[in-house]
Picture 1 (cartoon, one colour):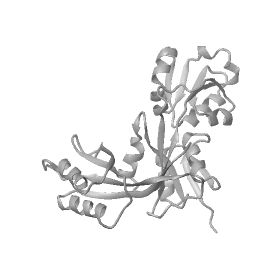
Picture 2: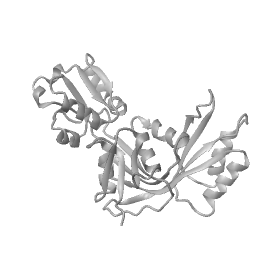
Picture 3: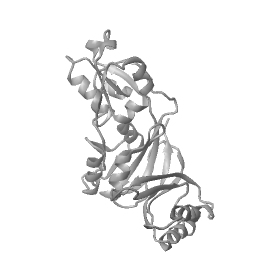
Picture 4: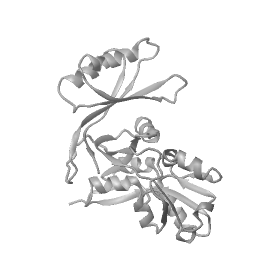
Length: 287
C-alpha cells in the first residue's frame, strides 16, 4: 500500500506543521519552502495532500494561497482545521540576558503584523525582516548565534531550534486563529482519523463576474440570499488583467447539496459568471 505523504509550509515547527499533526498524526510529512511549492508538489503527486494557510483572524486572507489556486494550480479543498495562534519572541541562548539589544527581528509578514503593537513599543529601533514562515525565522536565528537576532514563532519552533523564549504571547489580540486547508487534485471525501470534532461544512466558490454589467455583484449575492444560503466570507482579488478586474472567493456555510447550491451556480452562470467549485468540505476546530 502506498504511503500517505503530506506536504506543508516548512521548515519544521511552523504553525502549518502543527495543523498537519492535528489532521494527519500518523502520516509522513514533507516540508516545502513556499506555499506554491506545496501546491505544485500536490499537483505533480509528489505528495498525497498538502496543508497550507488560507486565512488569519487578525490579518485576513493569505492572498498567495488564494491567488495561486485561482491563477496557477486549481486543486480542491477537502478539509479545513482552525488552529489557535500564539506568537513568542525568541533568541539564541547566547543572548538570553541581552535580548533587549537585538538589532533585527525575523518572522513571516503575517506574524509581524500580528505583533505590531509589541514591536512598535519595544523594538522600533530594530530592523524587521520577513521570512517565508515563522519556522524559517527560528531556524535562521538558531544557525546564526553570533548575530543579535530575534524570531517571532511558536513554542514548537523554540524547542526544535533550541531557542529561548524571552517574551511569550506577544500577539496584539488574544482571539488569533488561522484557517488551514487540505488540498488534493480531486474532490475526494476527507476521512477524519483523529480526535478532532467535526464542526460543520463549507462550500467554497471562485466567481468571475461578467464584464461591463452593472449590478452583477448584487445579482450574485441575490442568488444566495433568496435561497437562504449563509455566506461566511466574500472577498475580491485582482484578476491581474488590469485595474478594476476582480474575481470573488465565497464561502457558503453548507455542504454541497443537490438543489440549493447547484441552483445558485446555474443562476450565476445564466447571468454570465464563471464559477469554479474550489471544494465542499468538513471543517474542524483545534484546541
